[in-house]
Length: 123
Image 1 (cartoon, rainbow, N blue to C red):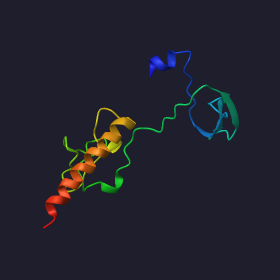
Image 2: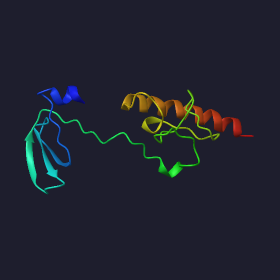
Image 3: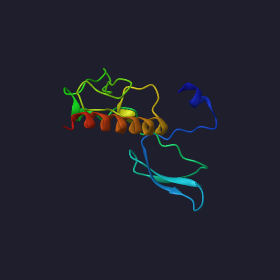
Image 4: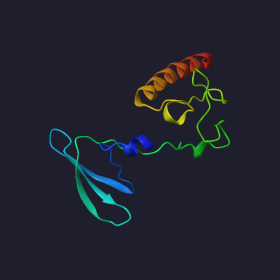
């Protein structure tokens, strides 16, 4: 975080909601709402990186599926959880990399594994 704060090309806007990304063929700016002051303003920008946090949203499985101390679902290399037939994929999983590419790969692997699991259950 210190490196980002020290970089003059990076600017953090905290406690704001992006109301609109401005531009026609490319990003030219954003209109933001400050949730504390309720003021809106426009910022000129060439691009937008939206950070929504990294807290897992897994309260619905608490006590059912094993998680780590932060709430991420524990799974093996085939994405199986501690409950047979329940698989975890994407950012909800305890994984060192949280990117769209890895989530898509997880989804593909989980789908194949679910298909195998269900095929074994068919009599």
